[in-house]
Length: 166
Image (tube, rainbow, N blue to C red; front, top):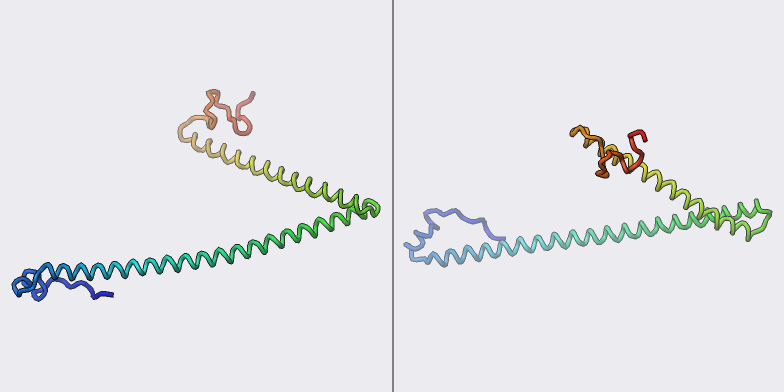
């Protein structure tokens, strides 16, 4: 690193330097060289900081990826064991016919997952509709108008049910 910049004093004042026979341009060139060195050091420090941050980010991403892959493997293993258990349980219920138990499990498990996903989506959609209606009702409270997110002239809600009797 370079030394801190000196304040002009009687000894290093450019006017005194010229009077003493030193060229002020040489003094300016020396100061610019010091500035260049300082900026180069600062840039080097910033580059080192960026490299350090990138290495840490890459390592964290690697560890996180390994953890996610391991977690996904555990979930898949659990799902396979649940499906096998369900198939064997259905085999017992169907009189020991293994093919029927696995066939029933192959139909029942995906259908139950599809039904659960449909119910989940319906509940989430209804929640979003209620949130939107509440947002538009809250916005219209200040203006004195009825909430109308659709822009229809009859002031009926197109999202969800209408508040007006039909």
